[in-house]
Image (tube, rainbow, N blue to C red; front, side, top):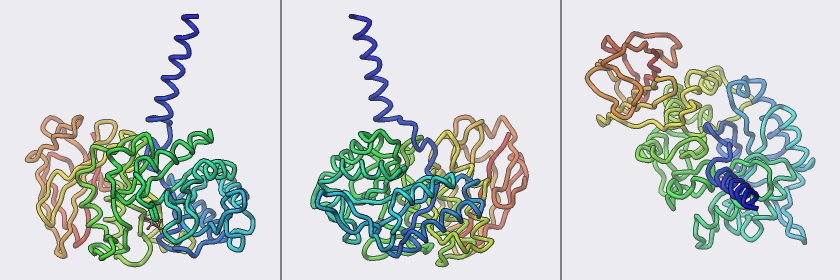
Length: 395
Ligand code: GLA
């Protein structure tokens, strides 16, 4: 009897630990594609299928991208039983068939809903239908849910996201849960165990430095809002500074490299937001840069810290496994940064396994893909306006 009790106790403890904190999902930042930044409400099954095919053909799947996420506007109403109905003109084959197709390409299927009564585009939200919707998603083979916060009608955010989290867990299907309440209720303080990632800001705009009255932010302003959030990121629970704009035309090649480099440093989810079917060489080069992606996907799961802030010039460091570290020199100014950096002069006190005084490290340039010196010498480089020098120190 006693043994039996102990057994159930252990099973229960293991179950609650697994289901709350560590369900084994998103142990590194999720990578994929989302329809919103490029297509907005203009989504249909042809676009989604072609994007999945392009993810494979462009080499992005092999580089680690896996989720194909349909954002807002796929849903059109509810039937008499309250079941959510996809727009049958835009998705004539239905969501199950679309999910099957995405899976047949070795990818995963993501969808969008909202904790409010309506989505941000006025489509039916999940409020009052959380468990029913979660069951429907699981039947369709959904692997990822982005859950928004429009028309929330004064709900408590933590409770609202917990309800959908419980609903997803109750389906028994592993579903990555992306909290999207724009950082309004400091989700980094309560999101771990409820979701696997949480948006930290208003929506990204396709610009380097810009702010909009309604809350849209450019890349630099988003980065500034991540700097203090590093304690909250780790395997299974990530700060999400929003989806990528790489390839959407609003920034220069240099700026997009900076955007991608910094998202990698921030251990941010890498959700491409461009048209994957007709990428130019530079866009593809950025999105499939394995030296940068491996920094983002490092198993330690640490978010970079801005350990030197000199106004227009910043230095960020991200501890990596195997006693390595990624360092990003960020030039926010519109002039060239003539860098002359002495590795021994500044201690990255939080990078425990790296000792620049004791050991010499080789410096790997993650955009040139070559060694550019060692930490025993001064690092000299011209960093272009709005550009980065992103390096990995290797033993
Ligand atoms: C909000 C989200 C965006 C996108 C739109 C869709 O603005 O923050 O990422 O999902 O809604 O309507």
